[in-house]
Amino acid sequence: MKFVYEMPEEMLRETKKTGQVERLCYDTRTYEAEDDHVLHKGAWVYLPYGYDGTEKYNILYLLHGGGVNEDWWFKMFPETVRIVDNMIADGLCRPCIIVTPTYYRGEEADRDADYITEHFCHELRRDLIPAAEKAFSTWAGGDVSEENLVRTRGHRGFAGLSLGSMTTYRAALYNNFDLFSWYGPFSGCCGPNGDHDREVKRIRETLAEGERRGLSLDYLFCCNGDQDIAYAEHRDIMERAARECPQLKQGVNYDFFTIPGGVHDMKAWQLDLYHALQIFFAG
Image 1 (cartoon, one colour):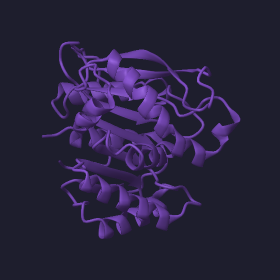
Image 2: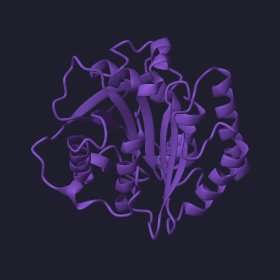
Image 3: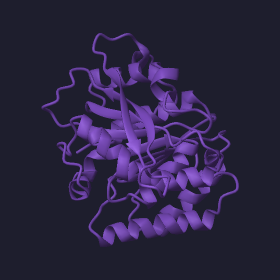
Image 4: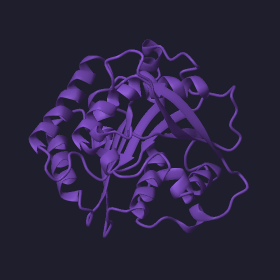
């Protein structure tokens, strides 16, 4: 695949082969000790043009950044839908389902970024994935038992921007590596005050444990603009991780895509998604 640094104009054109964005509602008990405490949440789900409930689709869970919500990718920036539609129509990526949830709950704890990025892993595993993959036709085939979700991890990816990029590492990579094999952290790993040593250690231990269990990494596609506020920390951590993790093989299952002049904005993140979808679920 050839990397580009501006979104190709043809990805923004009108197309008759348009996918649909539907609402997914689900309940979670993740955040309270009491079994009867239910939090009602929602996500948006992109279904590709010609979606057929008898077919099996790969699925990408795609997170927003801090201070917004699940509306970000598809409702606040509807051109994201057009980009994905055109990519599928032009054969640049396979038809896939994309789920855009939120880690927010409207509570005081939402102000704690470390809490959010660490604890979303439980909701993701217990509530969101089962709800999405019962409702829509994925490789899980409606069987959302843990055993089957692990078996079908090669058809499941997770990506996110900014605080969602941190969550990609913490909720999906470190804590749910048995459920995902494709990862797209767009803009950052631990934030400006994070512990780089700790993050490198967690990456190293996650990949080593995965290898021990026979769980391979299909791709870790890291992205950042070189003028992005999250660039320096992300680059440092991943350069160190690439040296210390024999499981990371440049150009085979790992890349760090840098946008020259790229900053912390949606233009860069849509470009990151454009590249990630050409890599994910290949083979």
